[in-house]
Image (cartoon, rainbow, N blue to C red; front, side, top):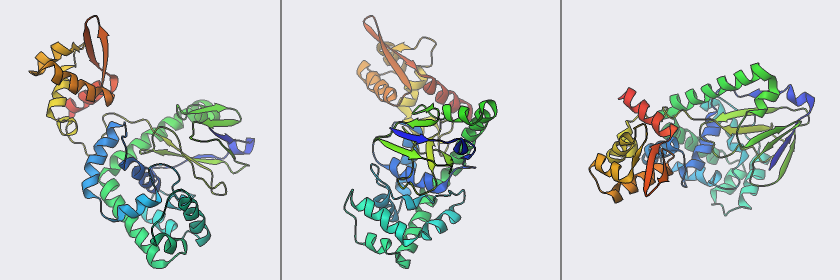
Length: 322
């Protein structure tokens, strides 16, 4: 549990990031590249991004591993909405910060030889890091930035509504399912116990497209207090805008469409609708259920499959966009 302790001064200094932060999205999307991410939007993005990534991604992945500590200097403490400004801030990181962060990372996992040069502030190694950040953003995020930025903007609008309706405490109370406002403490589901005392500095809230499961923050308490939280995703907003068949495969897209009935279908009825066997129908519904698009429940001797709200929304979006 992370407990963020507010004073009355802190409540007047809560700030919401003005737009999507390209370096936070870079770091958190690196986390999302590996593992079995449950989000359909992330799986879609990952399938499109992986073939485009260059060797520089390996450098970034060592600094931002999918689990455990990621170096704080990859996300400048004051945030940014412009990639160039953000990269300049990363490259201007004081040497002491570079050494501190890389020492913390080295305690968690072995680092390659170039990490020592980076910790020393070697200009050429820093330039290489800047090139890696720019190349990764260009390959993985830039093609989808309209969706990423638009999704973050939509979240900011909802937060502004909460702020207008009930003030800062309403904003904090409705921030995310993994948080709970127990005044004057914001409790955040976290992998370990930690207390963060703001001490009048306030806090910067950063909505993120690639953050998932729970909010995250920087390790170093001397940096600007920041809490990055996952936004809700519009199921119609998938990076790239590819048709449903390209996302799910033609056969599973057909299965999803076949389930768009008021009462759903049993496994045998679904098999007849798609012209396949019961085992094939069951296999496809298992995959769609794991993706959160279908729900299955026993109805007497039969298994009844119906669309979830997410599955119905994606199917509707696909039909309206062609």
